[in-house]
Length: 209
Image 1 (cartoon, rainbow, N blue to C red):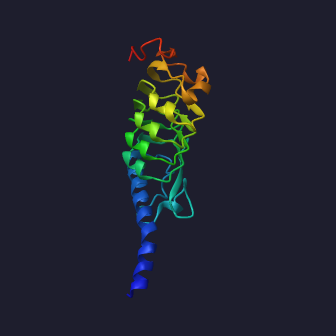
Image 2 (image 1 turned 120 degrees about the horizontal axis):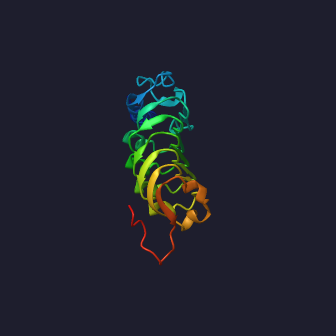
Image 3 (image 1 turned 30 degrees about the vertical axis):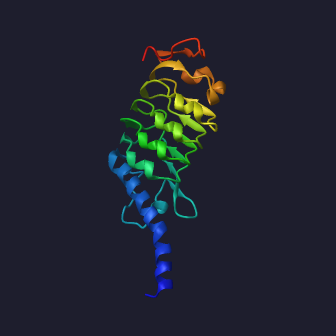
């Protein structure tokens, strides 16, 4: 092969390598989930990339931008490998029976706009690493079994418009800075140990966590 052909071959190979990495990450998710309705049946790891799989959307460069698995009767656990989906904008896994914790690696999804994990059985803390998601607009974690405090790192996301953590087991106080200035208190209700909005400079926060 001459030099020109070699360069062309490498250029063709690069998106395939990315796509295979993303396919591997998604297939790891598939293996961690119980799927009685076979909604993931098309997730074939032998394909060049996952862009032909049902419930997956890709951009023009064959990079995964959406995972739409809401209300799919899935159970099992989330996997840290999803943090490799660098171009992911929408992660929709609401209304399933997913257990376990939210991986800290989700903080690597720098292009994420919407993280919808509500109505599951997810436990553990809300990872402070989610504060790295500077494109995040929608964070819906309500109706789970989450514990611990609301990370103050989330207050540093300027694009954040919707936060719903109602009906969990959170503790501490409700942030009031940044995007939290405009989040209704109803989005924090049904957390028995979660106290009211914090008073800046007048109280020690999260003393009951």
